Length: 77
Image 1 (cartoon, one colour):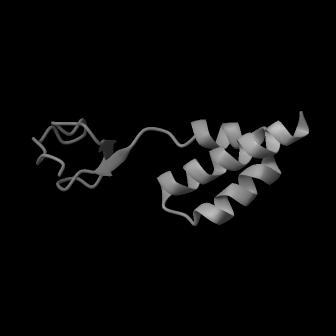
Image 2: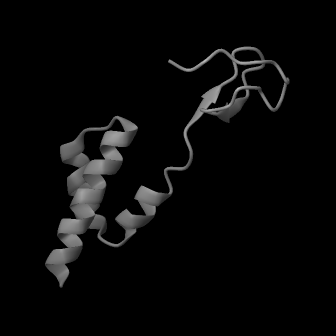
């Protein structure tokens, strides 16, 4: 059973590192060492955000209107 946590933690570490732009080998090693805590790292990455070009506040990536300054946002490429 302990091998399952090592494998699962390593896979989750690789995926989390890839999503955040970190080294996937290091992410896999850290994920395998953390075991069950790797699940929390994976799910705690949160929603994707961007910065409003008009008021510099964080907003959802898919937002069409800034919730802070109410300006219409350019489309995301």
